[in-house]
Structures are given as C-alpha cells and as structure tokens.
Amino acid sequence: MKIGVLAIQGDFIEHIAILTKLGVNSQQVRLPEQLEDLDGLIIPGGESTTLSRLMSMYHLREPVAQMAQQHKPVWGTCAGMIMMAHEITEEDPIPLQLMDIGVQRNAFGRQIDSFEQDLEIVRFNTPPFHAIFIRAPVIIRVGDEVQVLADLPDGRPVAVQQGNLLATSFHPELTNDTRFHKYFLDLAATQTAGPD
Ligand code: GLN
Figure 1 (tube, rainbow, N blue to C red):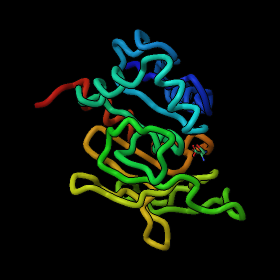
Figure 2 (cartoon, protein in one colour; figure 1 turned 180 degrees about the vertical axis):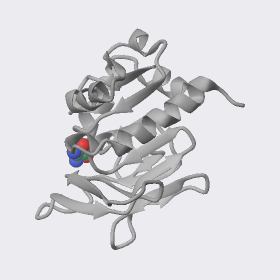
Figure 3 (cartoon, rainbow, N blue to C red; figure 1 turned 90 degrees about the vertical axis):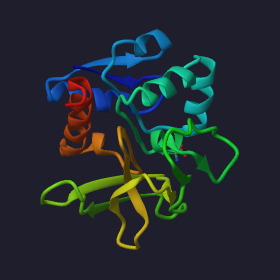
C-alpha cells in the first residue's frame, strides 16, 4: 500500500512521520503524475488560500477529484478539510467540492484560535481522542450521505465521513494517537481489496 500526502504546503511531514511509524509507504505529492498508483491521499493542514492557489497552479485539482471519484480514500485535516468541502462561507479559497459539507474557516475567533479538546469518536473505542485545533474550521452543513464521527460539546461537527472521504477540523498528525491514521488506512485497504 502507498499513501500520498499533498506536499505543496502545510504540515505534510507530520503525516508522513505517522505513516512511517505505522509501516506504510508514503509519497510526497507535488505533481499530478505523483498521484498515480496511490491507494489514498491526505491533504494536510496549513493555509487553505495558499493550498487552493498552488493546487490550481500545479494542475492538481482534477486528478485529486478523479481519485475521490474512483473511491480511493481522501482525507483532509484542517485546511485540508476546507479543501474537501462543497462550499465555504467565503469566496476564497476555492474548495475541491469532494464532500457534501459546508465549512466555515477560522470558526473559533482570535482569542481562542488554538485549543485542545477530548472528543468521543463514534467509530473508536475509549479513550477519547485528544484533538488539537489550530485556527480551525468548523462544519456548518452536513449532507444526507455524510456521517458525523465526532462533534464538539456544543454539537458542532468536527470529524465527518462520506464513504471513502474523511475530513477533520483538527490535527491527528500532531498527536501520538494513531487511531485516525489507522482508520484511514483501513478504508484504503478495503478499497484495494475491492468489493466482496
Ligand atoms: N486557518 C487555516 C485556513 O483557513 C487552517 C489552519 C490549519 O490548517 N491549521 O486555511
């Protein structure tokens, strides 16, 4: 199995470190041809306006959308989640429209633009997942096909899944908890194995 990590901006090194720790081959993706033969793709956190511009410049939008359509797992964390959205509350950045979610950037205001929160994740056993939010977005609309995996105590969703697609407002790659990465790898393994 080989997982791509979009490596044009943001904290891609941290995702690669976790994949390596889990014994999985990874590929830094900067060019469309580097998406070939991958079993999944992670879009890291960073700055979504920059990600959006660079994805256009490097002609990455179309091939990433194709990967998602081919049922390969694609997971966006934080700025990556903004790129996964169908719509956001601003005109810039331009999302990839892969998931049926609406997202608001920088949803937590300046005074608490970074915080940590223990989350109960529907698909995981105990203990709760210690989630790190950094100038994080929040999901403000969830389509019918989208499952909420975790929400904040106030009920706002921060982790969602739509089939082979995952999005998290927070940064699992900045913790030692590998459960989210393992969950994503399980999705990739299921796709590679094909339907029964
Ligand atoms: N605030 C950033 C944005 O809007 C996201 C921050 C992050 O990825 N940690 O793109």
